[in-house]
Image (cartoon, rainbow, N blue to C red):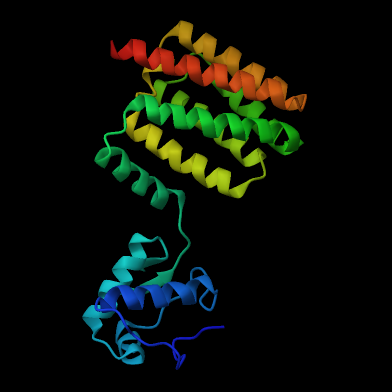
Length: 238
């Protein structure tokens, strides 16, 4: 296991803060420091690495951007684990810089969620089925405010991702969901009574397919559901 005092560690890059950040990341990933553990004070880190406090502070800022360190006011710096928010922040920058349009964003959603639904059909447990049934019951309340309906709808899709048993797929789904909420017009395609009824039918068919462990049907209905939602978004923007 690597330690901060490893004699084989030599600073060779001009950008000291990046070098130190990489070293600290190696230590965190090797689990020498566990999640929620407090890091040594900046002065201690500076002394151990033979650099200034400013360099250490810059290194910690880099680790914050990577989602590996968080600062708690009045307490210090702590090890954390990257969250879906960290990934969605990167994706959002790419969307803006590469001028990615809403159709490509939605297409990505279709790819990820149809795959998640297919896998969930083969692995879903009663626990997740009950969660989906509770969420569907809430969606069937036509008096539900638009914002709350949107949140419940997104929760329904996230439960399916979790039911897939693939943790990385869950992270990707959550990251993309964050992107959808920022860049898409998710309230527009569920705001009318007709679209609500249509959405409920799709959700019920998806749940029925999952209960039956019918992977092909689950994937197909999820595709139809999201493709129709995309059509509704296009209409709302015309």
